[in-house]
Length: 77
Image (cartoon, rainbow, N blue to C red; front, top):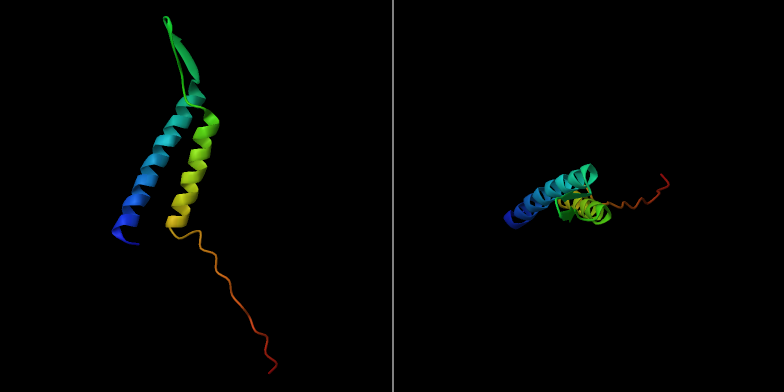
């Protein structure tokens, strides 16, 4: 893995941690009001989709996504 790929992998991991924190914040409190102002957090579905995508990208970059095919030739000995 070259330096650029390592940096990208670290960014993906950092972003994934932020998405985990965002998911937790949404789960704890989706919407709240302070006085006359209200705040609604991001959509949980889009956060979870981003988490799934980042986990997939990290797995592929770390080499866990390689599928190997083997061909066997039967021989009559």
